[in-house]
Amino acid sequence: MAKCVNCLLCKFELDMKIGSLNLRSAMKKSMYIRGKIEKEKMDFFCGTDTWHCQSDEPSLVRATPPDYDYVEDYNDNCYGSVVIFLRWSHNTYKLNLPQYNTQQCAIIWPHNQLES
Image (cartoon, rainbow, N blue to C red):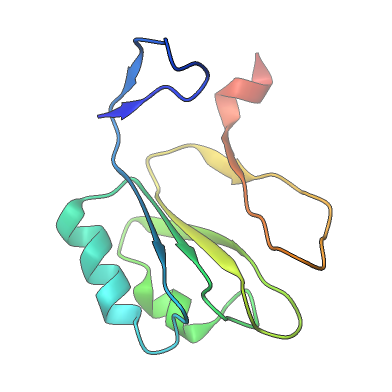
């Protein structure tokens, strides 16, 4: 169970599995990433330092399990970069953020949170 991140005193528990890993390049790790997501049955998995150079990077496409999608951000020099894999069952979308030269950011947000 994941704890609510709004407040350390919050007793609300989220029924989801979240994982994160510094990949130090996702280029030859597609099956490892996919296997980790599937084995742990993660709802969200964030990979940092993926070193990908395009949004439809083949290594990210191969790493995406069935019924999952991903959002990502990369920079032109192909270093750094971040990806978030998420189950289709989570009704989310990527927020548009300002571009930074020193870091990459990707944030996803539940649809129903902004509609209310």
